Length: 421
Image 1 (spheres, rainbow, N blue to C red):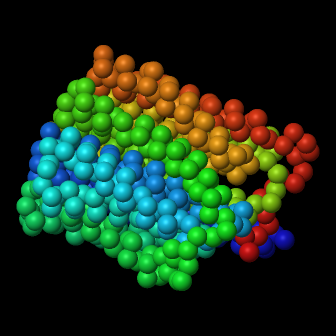
Image 2 (tube, rainbow, N blue to C red):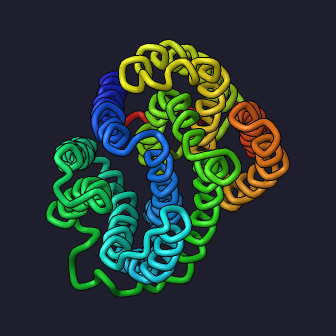
Image 3 (cartoon, rainbow, N blue to C red):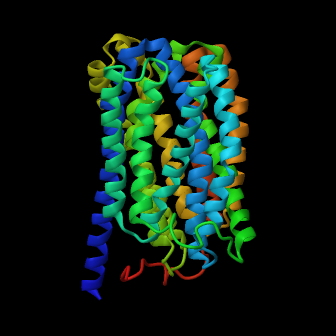
């Protein structure tokens, strides 16, 4: 028994190492090479516009790609259906993706070029497939290939950075192609090494199609609200302040987001193992989980502020003085947002997925009531303080839902499984 527990612990550590390593590699390339290259090439104002465009990509990819990703995991947990249901859903999503992409291109950049818009639609759709694609390795708890998947994205972005530096495809299209290159490499890799895009049933609906689509709809709606609110800082600052304000706030929150994004692969591990967890959801277990989440918030916030001073001074020296005042509150707000997301992943193992949608609807309402007026009247400070308030409230809401679903019986049986095998 002790030996099995030791093996299980070592496997979790190894999985965490590879999953976090992959995300660190990708975000390291984005923040140290790709985005600074774009900023140097285009300047703070245009960089703010490009960040706003990428916010649109992120909203669509998170809503559709991550929604389908999590729904596929739920389908496995409940033993219903296979890959065909989700591939059909992804294929149909091309239509709204294309419409939103073109409208955003015209409104934000004033870009009406057919070539540019086709490239931007392709970037958005490939990003959706990339966000979905890592489910292949989480379904099989294969975090070595998960690491390779994100490493390939990183290598694609490295190559893309050189395209930007030498302006290979011209000012309008090079940044789109640079990012697209990384997405294409990852999708090609999962198509070659995985099974989710292969087989005779690749576009064949299962008998559980509508049940799977119902779950997908819940998770898509939840992730859409989630992503829209997460990216709203760029869109709101662009609309009510300036393109330069988008860049300043992005840089001020950058390290907080990068550090907190480490929770994304952790969520994958949590989902993978909780899918096979047969124990009970006890008050003691959830209390320890909440305490750990708060400790992570404190640690990540302190680390985020410290690293922000070093990183921004090196990579964005032109706006360092303007951003330092926002570091503590901006980093704290970002960390609370992501950590509450990880806490929700735990809660969803024992509660219906509708609670994620309900939580995010409440969160979106709070965001609209607090953050939007704050931005209009107080600019960058408004969004900094407003986001901290609503993200702390989000954490509290998730905690309340968790405690409402704990097993009130004996604490016995609430242990982790002895083995992952």
